[in-house]
Image 1 (spheres, rainbow, N blue to C red):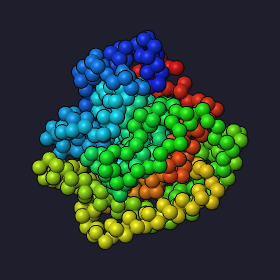
Image 2: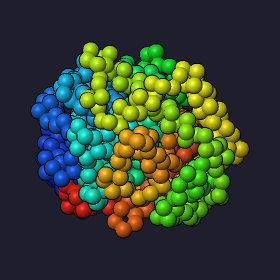
Image 3: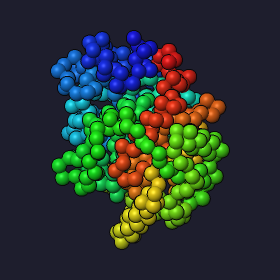
Image 4: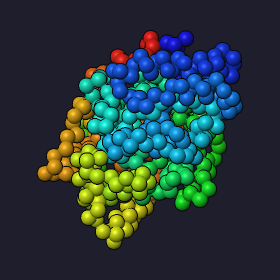
Length: 483
């Protein structure tokens, strides 16, 4: 059964348990075997939690929709009490830091019946769109182990793409769900702002750019997990609009004839989009037209403002400074330059030099930009189609740090994250789908909807998945026999 489970999504594995054809223990043991077989080559899982997973699977699991299904969760963001938690930081690794309480999202995974088998690799503080932390070493892409998995949820994406588990936790503050989904040939939905809770520890990190969800092989898994986890927690500062119907029901709902804008030129014109990425978006546009939708070249004019990137980088540096202070206070041990990577410390220093009035100005600018972008949707468009990335998965080692130009490695990230980060500032939902391959590498396409409308994204994503299936594609480094 191990080969079959490697290609089976979480919904399919849950159905085995409900039908009595497999037990939670069998699913978890098979996942552990796959992690042990594959992780040495990929370095996706940095904290195995196998004994804990076995105990959970053999105990009284909640009777949720994913009872007994194994998953992995990223070592940044949602967490369970008593587990290692390092966020890619040497400071936390050396302290052997463990979180003292559950996040509310982790409790929702548990209530859904999911069993976490370990924690996945992430760049330090989730800063870069590649997963190469010095504290734990680089994760490698199962489609080409010399290439980046993307980031910051790169360990999760590598594990799912390689068939270790059917889904894994991810989060997104500038593209960190969609970028690794594109790089590893998977489905990555960034939800609307506040669709899932960040509590009890966090309210609006990075000006509420961050959202939590999963990376999956199938659209139906992404929808079903969101059904199990969406909704605010007590005291959350924002609340997303309630969905019209269960997200799983969206997959069977006709999206109708939509008006879709397509954009293949770089936002703000800061880089040249790789021809393979242009071809991926154009090919998706042709497919959408064949399904009855109207696709025209158009995008929100707000994307053309070059000031957006400068302000995003400044906000990113402020977030780094804030995170370093957060960990100094939480651990009771001052984070020093020796406790983090040189690039992280340099960004923190830049962030500390930005004043409070400047920060408020940046937030006001980004909120105004979000309103300007929303006018495009109000003007009659339903979706925006873009490449997910401006380049194919880059080689490992592409994001080197030069202390003479401390922001330089962030600017190197612009071609990777240029199409994704804007929607974190606006709070809109966006999804990356694996609709294109070039020279053996997956090239994702991104669809963006109006705020609160994950339902429309899932309807169209399911339509595209049916028209051009991708589940039969498996990478050269894979835990089971090809589908």
